[in-house]
Image (cartoon, rainbow, N blue to C red; front, side, top):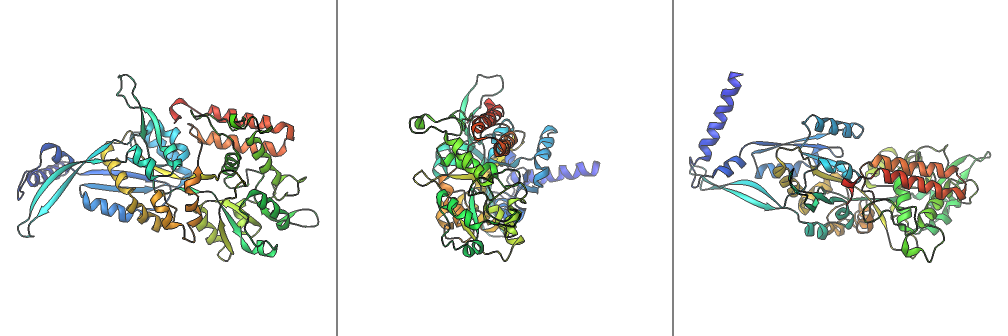
Length: 478
């Protein structure tokens, strides 16, 4: 213990001697000395190993050698529980990754981005034998609300700009719009295609509308003598064995004109939008649900999926389904499991005549409210998410961009092009405090809807809407 204390005192004494002007043309003031003290940033992630961030971390560490960065990746199944336990014990990370639908859940645990951060710099002058140093404490501008809206897709601005109370404890409330996170990539839902199955069925063109998509399904389905489905056209109609079924049904509702929430963020997807009340008799959300469920309805000509089918990703990699809806993060898995699959990636089909709408699914970097170095944490995140640094990450991680100015760079990319092309028209909708409750409500809606009579579907939707509404909280609203 005594030896450790003497070592620490020696290090502090040496640092003080250097900073006080020994060999320097200009000694730093007390604030700069404090900013030059060694600090550590703890970063927790759930996607990507450190290697895809290594060039960025090295560049930042070179500019700020007093900052040590520790990067830790956890398994997704343990990530949230580890986060919440760590925060409860005041040992959590300074910077951590959350899904865009989790922002409302974690809002009370986040430190909003400050307008400026302070960082100390050391500048060397002279030769190696006669070197002098000067020190400067800089106020560095963070990404502003305008910057974020100009540089990122609308979906990001809608998700990460939150109206929160920024007043100090005990003071009168001060409600302001603040940025609470920044992404490095924005993924979008696309359609994976088994070209061999389409070729065998004589389908020369991948469908780009849902009407054309429906028309191809009967040509792709194969059954045995007992009626068992051997080959499916698509994996739709159910939830428990369909990857990201809740995203698929959400985007179908959005494309059909459903207003998923009020301006305050409360769900309205089961209701008739005012703008459509004079032209439609059936709510757009209900029409979308009926459309989706028909793919698992044996009485329909497009019947192609049932509860006996395996998970949709498994079925696709086994060559048993022609169309699979997924994200860019599914691609490495598909290629690893089915390296000989004659694969195409196509844009998500749209409703002809309606505005193009796609679905955003992504992660954002945030700073913990319990961080002892929030200025440094936000300074690093502002550095990491700069356009040039984002591109370093994207090229290593093989993901679509977040910055709008990088989208054109990836449009011709064989793997990321389709996902990138849909970013500007992508949306998300959930702003609540319990994203799992939302997922469960929509999953139950689909599963119950697949067993319900047509006249009962509206009631099934209203129940789901009510359950999602119960997962909202005032702190989670935009």
